[in-house]
Image (cartoon, rainbow, N blue to C red):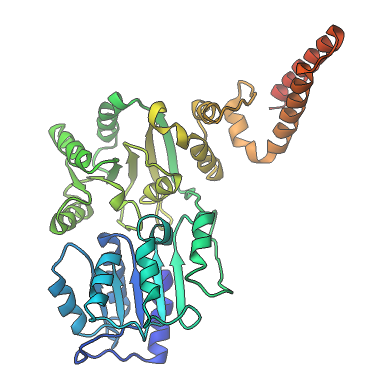
Length: 406
């Protein structure tokens, strides 16, 4: 959040602000939108630090609280409005917020804001007649993942000559996070989880699951195993979510079992481990989840349970993420990835070496495979018995040469 808060506050201090607690309709200069209550509150707390001692007034509004409370907060003056989409549109509809003075519109976790549940809300926001057009405001979007199709959607919100800045790989995992993918069938996950948590002691750990009820069930199960744990998910009351997060931050409960509601943007100090009890449906969610550890130059560990029957669609993407982060790719995961896609890759017994040197030698592998495919196709044609024998010999020779090279 510092990447956009600091320059925005600096610009507002230079250009002046106009918020007044006497106005019936507040007209903030900056609107920041994020997908979850926890993330938008985190952004608000950072904004409050940066504007301390100035005349700039930040306000946060989100669901799970009384609408009247949100309105009272806004009526005390508002220059920077931090909001979740639903509550923001609700307050605008009640005409307590005017948009004509918006100079900065910030979408945090922009891929989710545009394409993963909030796209229609965001289009409604910029479609209000009082919202300045995109060439009259500055629109900023931030995310660790930004698929191509979302970049195309972003064009509706941005100026024609917008800048796209990339730090590291788009959609890539941080190399400070040590990733381990374990083959664990569904029925063995609970025992494996307990084994891992008992081995790491009281180090702060986030455990991600795929369902809300499962989060409560796993947390209760861990408590029965003498491992202090709490849970956070969308069905819990807002107060319960805040208490669970505070208990985790303070160390009262060193294990937090969560759904993807806690996967994006949350900055919690000293999270040493992330465990994907259930892998998410998309590789983007995986990258965000493991990003809860290894933050701000610290190192962390991420362990993911991979069930062949449920997670095969992620195998190839996981191989790419691991390779891009210069991490060891398990042999079985590569085999699953290529098998899932209906492909075959001939490798030597030293598969680990192949994984580590894939980037530098990938074009050699592609050459060998191309030769094999061409020869195999020729083998299928109507050729004489002598030609067939020679062709088979050539395939074996190329195959052995590729294995020897790698």
